[in-house]
Image 1 (cartoon, rainbow, N blue to C red):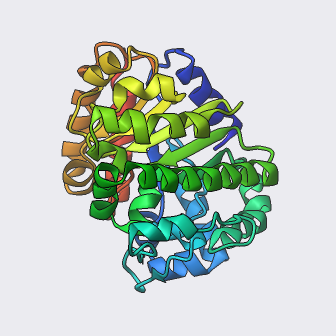
Image 2 (tube, rainbow, N blue to C red):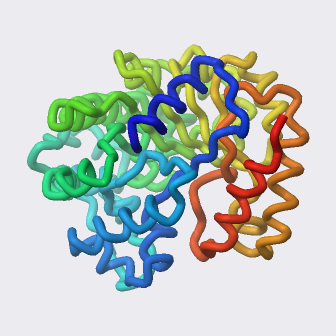
Image 3 (cartoon, rainbow, N blue to C red):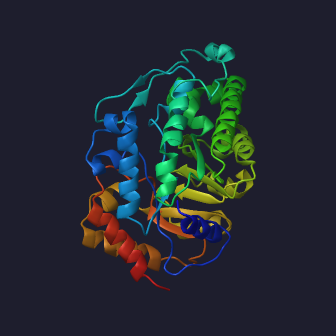
Amino acid sequence: MTEEQWDILKRTINGELFDPLPVGFIMDSPWLPNWYGVRIIDYFSNDAIWLSANLKAISEFHDAMFLPGFWSEFGMCTEPSAFGARGTFPPDEFPFAHKVIRSPEDIDDLPIPDPATDGLLPFVLNRLRIARQGIEGAGHKIRFAVARGPLNIASYLMGATEFLTLMMTDPDRAAALIKKITTFLKDWLRLQMETFPSIDGIFLLDDLIGFIGVEEFRTFALPYFKELFDSGVSVKFLHNDAPCKVSAPFLPEMGVNLFNMGFDVSLNELKELTEGKVTLVGNIPPRDVLASASPEEVFEKTKELVAALRDRARVVVSCGGGMPPGVRTENIIAFVDAVKASLD
């Protein structure tokens, strides 16, 4: 993100109203490689292609913020790899991580990884080191330390059904696993911030928090996210595009000040659930509108979204979730144009 974009984002979080509203998208490997015209495996394995694809996107859509911007990652395999999870990387499909916890007892001996040396994490950092001159030469900086959240990682290490069941049948072991992952994540976020002093934001992604109840959230999510977001950075960003009505009221207590949700709940309702304390990034349907509709339909749906807002403060107009595969250039342009046309 440029200095101007970063300034606008921070001021939006602080409640300042911009007209037109800022536009931003979570942009990573599900969308960018194929939009750029390369296979996903080429995007992951060739640093020059990775940088060129990101530079083209920020140039093509300079009126939109890309969050986190220059995201160095290997899909869902990134953090699980540090715990020894085997990753499968089809040439042009999304990678996936294999389970390493076969029984609850395996949690007892699960080591806490060193993010400086373990799994794919050194490659994540080194890609950014190599690209840093090109990123800054384009007027941007590395702004976020990024990681999947603790429950999300647990679901990859153990299996989502198995981990959710463990919360009910052996809550002590479930908590022990989350504590180990949280310790690792604190080290991982700290390492990113130490490596790149321009970082002033934390971005965590965790959809599994959308599948638990209030009491489970209080026990297995709230204290650990508070610990992870307990930092002096300006932007504390959470993504959860699974159901969020249970977790949304807790966002301010978690320390979150920027939130990307799905599209099953309106921005107006989320403003009520968060008492207007959290900046919302959303939320037209990503697949059925942004990816599948015509530019004219995208334009109209986006205008309807903005017009429906009862309070335009603390809003970054986006889709409900990350940029999905298959979104065409003309649809993104139509989205940005619609926000520009929706002046207060």
